[in-house]
Length: 134
Image (tube, rainbow, N blue to C red; front, top):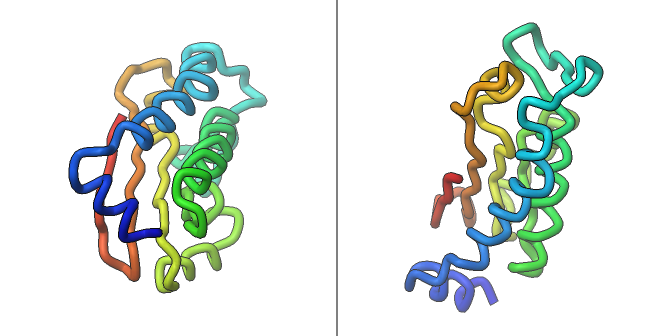
């Protein structure tokens, strides 16, 4: 299964992943851009390390859609790792791993600046196979 999916991706068939990322951004991130209330922003490890409802919702959206694209895969997302550092262990496993930063540049997102993106990568046994930036 992973071999077929990778062959498809490496042959330029990335549209399904791109569409999943675009849908997550459209549904969970962009409606909240410049619309966040104070209670929707939380400090993780200090004032420069923030998480928003958009980060969490987009990561959940991407987790569902990406694992549906590649059954048996798992997600190592920034917010899941913050909640439970043991999530990192998936990177050493045999399952394909989607590495997700749902809102890279959360501080800029919070300030209403357009300097943020969504990052997704696919790895297998510690080797990066593909990545997407939106």
